Length: 359
Image 1: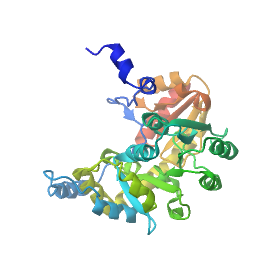
Image 2: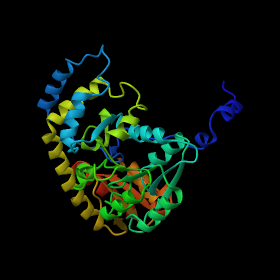
Image 3: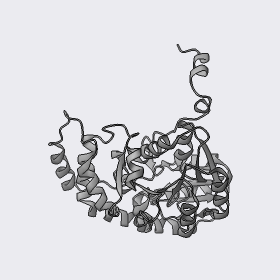
Image 4: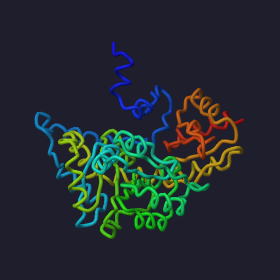
């Protein structure tokens, strides 16, 4: 048995202070907690995919640069000519690669808060300082506070989720541009929910020498593949590639993602349906007494309950519906819950359970 003093001696205190990223087991619950696409592929597409997998060379290492998949993603994601791309095992790995490449004692990662929790966690993993700048009351960027923090802390990297997670809103584009222009280091615009946002900074690549854009295929319906993309100037990505572990995108992911993007009309049709259902769900939430939903440009909706959010969350779970409880985070998220847009029947079950929980 490892003695506690050995842990204290060898594990960094900031790591000991962290809680591991927890993903609950949904069991048989209706799963509306993780911003997943609830739709599967048509049966004919599944059969064609399985046939494609028969040719996958599992006895060989994958293409380390994932060249065929990178070319497919360039076209599908609209990466401008002259910009480089690098793939990661989900966006999380890309956030870690960027952070590792710039990490040095006294350097800072900065992001608005509340936002994606991995920005703070990975800063800690890499031994960097982290500065979170509170959002405005409407969850928009506080431009003056952001610019003041950039001027004070001179961050190596600023991460901006666009749309933001967990709030779902799209930051004002002029505010984002002001941050890019003021930042002494990199600005990574994290467009994990680009499929639902109808807005992007991808076309702006090349206009700023410190702008990178990050995407993922997870919200498009491919969460199980764990595939992210970073796009930006070759000079930056060439340095990051030195940190990337070899063969980080496995053979099955390369084959499967390339196949899925060949059929992206199926994914795009699902995205349109989810976007339409998001509006229907938002209207229904807005009509409920004691519930305040916030505008969303993602595939989830943040809402506040005018009561005990923890009790509402527990009641929903007891009624067979799992969503995300953000109330324990406190601050601006006190009283807030977040629901992923599911299938219409799942959304209906959630609304029925919520009505009972707040009655």
